[in-house]
Length: 344
Image (cartoon, rainbow, N blue to C red; front, side, top):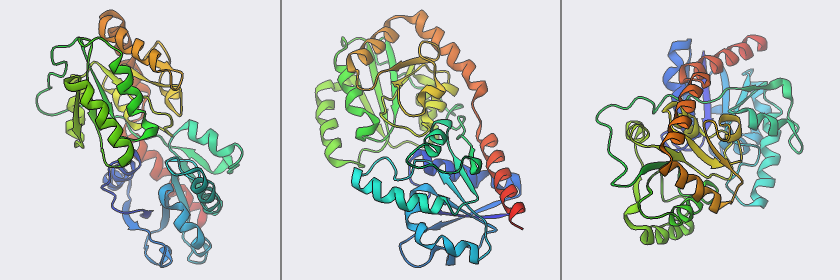
């Protein structure tokens, strides 16, 4: 089975969605499949670019594919979509999201299969205003094991402080980078060394504010920039806590990776995180925007070693319930094969 995956730009881009697509492509041969990437542009008809037995549209490209969706039926290729975000996306202006949501939904209604990356996203898709058909939606969550087993030595990350925390995410307002730095600034100097990994060029104005805050915090924060999987894995292995106060995550691949690495997870009660972590069990879930509570949680995690170890053990147990990428690929390709078989 050849799967034509329509997306935007290079599949090597750094985000949870592109990681998902790349891992599926790498594992396809284990499931009798092959994935061809087809970058989408506004013109020409994207269905002239594909050769697959099934066309799979990444949600980031859905609005561009939507005007041509009726062509899929005429070419007798089953059409599916993989949704890393709700219709309209989550990062653009409200006006852009409303317009894009109309186009996204129009494409999804032509699809015989909608792959949602989390239960939280599925619940959003079937509810107003989207009201997408529940019987076409299959939840296939991303794997958690990419960064669980690092190669090479584990770094010493505490740098003389009582705990090391890591946060993996691009510097964006919805990722809560400034919230995290504000919380860190409320702690005594000896508590936490924070390690940041991710892109710093996504939102330039926000990045400027982050850099201003970093100048005040000095060596309490280490910015690693973009790291490969093994670099991220070594940070997980050397850290005591994972923290990402993101305001919205349709899934949050890094949360699953942190749990798989046996780290307590700290974040806002938002998006899919409450489906992954129970407050006080595998980590700490806080009301969005409550920076004093975030600071208090980090303070306790850095000073109460027994509590931190208890949360870490629970995070390690949670690992068994999380999918590995082999599980993700098996479920995805099985669903696509079922779709193509029913289309014959």
